[in-house]
Structures are given as structure tokens and as C-alpha cells.
Amino acid sequence: MTQAIQYDAPFEPEFIEALRELVEEKITFNQVLGLKLTSVTANVLTGRIHMRPELVGHFSYNRLHGGVTSAALDTLGGLACMVHITTKHLDETPAQRIARFIKIGTIDLRVDYMGPAIGEYFDVRAEALRVGSRIGYTQMSLRGDRKSTRLNSSHIPLSRMPSSA
Image 1 (cartoon, helix red, strand yellow):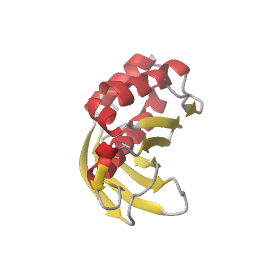
Image 2: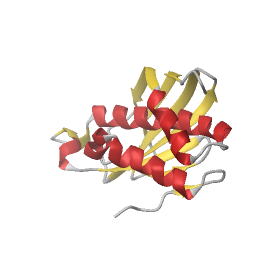
Image 3: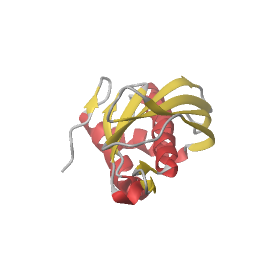
Image 4: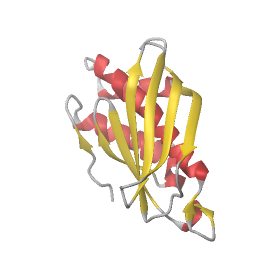
């Protein structure tokens, strides 16, 4: 069952559904992670991963594997840049805007592991801080179900944008 994604104007339901399908179904590695989008705005995307035995990195503590963390942060960081760019192309159909997503790639990713990721679920947040015609800069974070402690902080200083952005 698909949970409704909160979203803000200027996005139409067709775009949000196509974005959800891309993230949750077409990128099959995200299925392994269990990454689900929870909200979309022009600059900020959020998602959630529910803890499962397959995602454990430290068996003694039932801690989320660092690779899961970095993959989720990387995914939402790149998407935050692309969603921001799509706001400049609202004259295009949702399918045309989604097609722009195939042209992005991470150039650099830094993750600071600030605490053990232990919990029932983890919320991932990515914010597009600066997006140019070829390079974007995002800041991401992952928080556990206790919300009070940021477990990981991450930056993508460079995400390559499509040249036609």
C-alpha cells in the first residue's frame, strides 16, 4: 500500500506520483533500502526508512548500516536538486520533468556519522541550498524515531546537473 506523500504547490499530483514511482519502484536499490518519500516541496524532500533485519550493520546493537545511511542521503540529496530545477520548467509535462532526473550524478558526498542509528525508523531530509545550471549543493540529515538527535549530517557539494537545465 502506498502512503500519501505531502506536497506543496507548484507540483501537480501526476508529478508527485511519477516522482514516487521513480524513487520507490524504478530505482530498485531503494526497494532494498525500503526508502519511501514522505514530502516534497520546491527545496526540501523527506523520506523514511523502516528498520529491518536486512539493514543491520552492527548485530550486537541492531544499528543501521552506514551504507544504508549514505545511500539514502545521496538519493534524496540528488532528488532535491532535480526537484528544485523542475520548478523552472513548469511549462513541461510531468513526464518531461521526470525525464530530466536521468541526467544527474553525484560528484562528491560527505557523511558525518554523529551517533548510532538505532530505532524503528529513520527520517531522511534533503534541502537544496544552491542550485545552478550545472552544479547543485544540498544538505541532508538522517534522524531516528526519537527525533531529538541528528544521527548523520551530509553534504553533496557537487551534483552535476543536466546541461539543458
